[in-house]
Image (cartoon, rainbow, N blue to C red; front, top):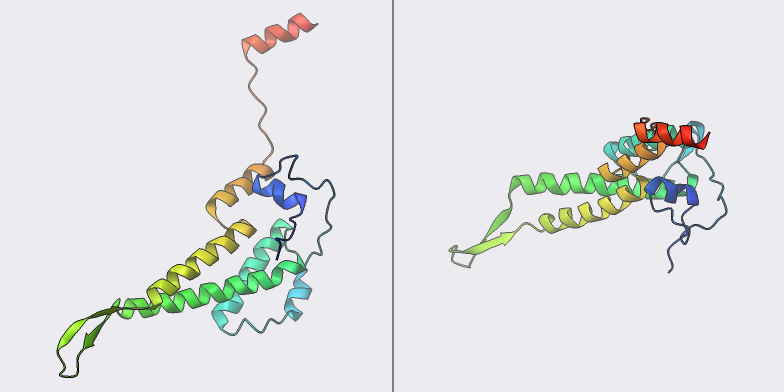
Length: 167
């Protein structure tokens, strides 16, 4: 299965807008509105935390004007991953290892908590989705640098002299 094509606007926001990567056409987004989000019901969002996380991220993207209807399933998946990772971390806090005993009750060794690997894998998947939406610190910097107007460079004596010579 091939990767889906990103709109040019997203490439610009991510800082990967190179002429060889641009499609040249502007893909129209189907913006999600707050009214649409109230009626949106995803069966993945079963816990209160996942629902609240989903709403927070949707509102954040709505403010930026980047929320597309096609992204809602990815955001719901992100909310579920974060919820499951939090549950795994709670399990890890109870104990990183479990004792293993033989038939006579003697200690043989320790078994690591399987939620450690599960939480690590979920963190990797969460980071991938976060990067897609600009939720990571580096992507936020890219978003801020694109949104902020460029400051006018200070006029140096050399630039003043060149202006006078051109006249």
